[in-house]
Image 1 (cartoon, rainbow, N blue to C red):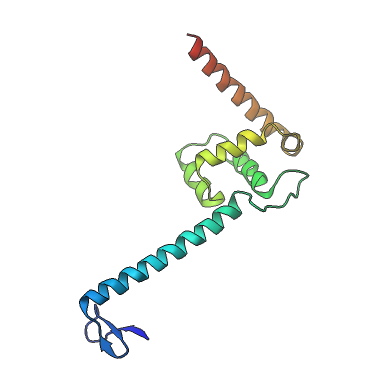
Image 2: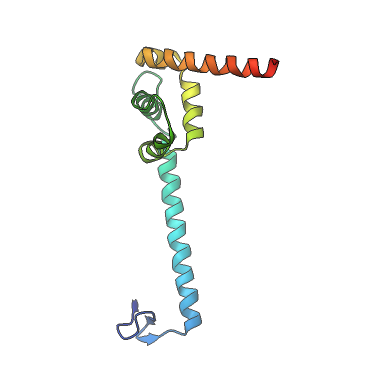
Amino acid sequence: MVRTSGVDPGRIVLGGQLCDPLLEVYFLHALILVRTRQVMQARTRHSSNATGVGATSHTGGVTETEERVLDFEAAHPNGGAHATTELWNELHMGRVRYQQILSRLITTQEALARHPMLVKRLLRRADAAAERRSRRTLA
């Protein structure tokens, strides 16, 4: 049984005896490593759920994650710095992954059928960006 001593709050007691300070450091380091591993495993599980791995299709070809991406884009049309934070808080994905999913999604008929105005606006925005890039490389 591991407990902290009531007499000396910084010391660890194992089996009723105070630990050697070096053993305390080793023990605390091991606890930190175990906790870090648990956090990383939880993030990996959460990330795989948030990015659509194993997500079922409820809308005829659009996964839950893709639907959530479309809904988020509809709610935050201009993006911005605050949207990046909200993106992580709501969807648990970064801006790059979000843009990858959104770019792929706007080319599907399912997304167009589900959110026609949003998808058309995003296609116009993508076309305008491609036009700007082509003008920049030609000039």
